[in-house]
Length: 134
Image 1: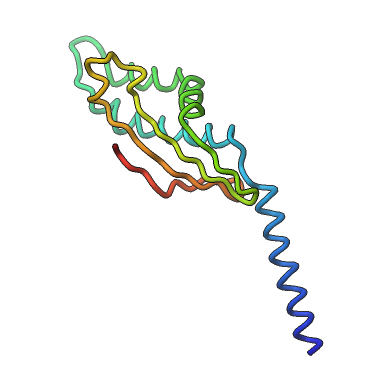
Image 2: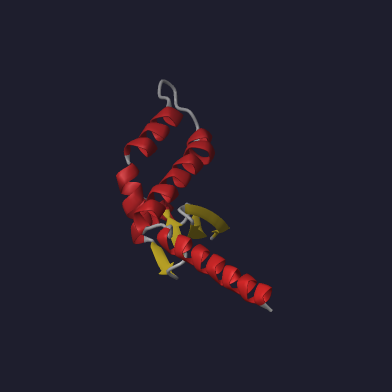
């Protein structure tokens, strides 16, 4: 009986310890914005900039990559304004609706893809578990 009580106390202490660790390492919104901006930057550089047709005498791909790198603050603001955070104290879920419509002329805005993402923030890390092209 004494061993069972000790085991129970140890299990409760371990669960409480994990809970405290999760609460202390629940990432903040600014950290998510940094993470999402890096992910979006990598996506744009590898999937968008590389597919832009070249023009004679102009390195459009290099200009696109430079533009993406030079506008990280704007990207973070864009992500912040299009993301909802659900804070569960131990972890957070970030839901983002990302669309380039606001940056494009009306005539072509419906040609740009939109994405919906869901990311969990826990233990100072982010794990994107859902990406849907809309």
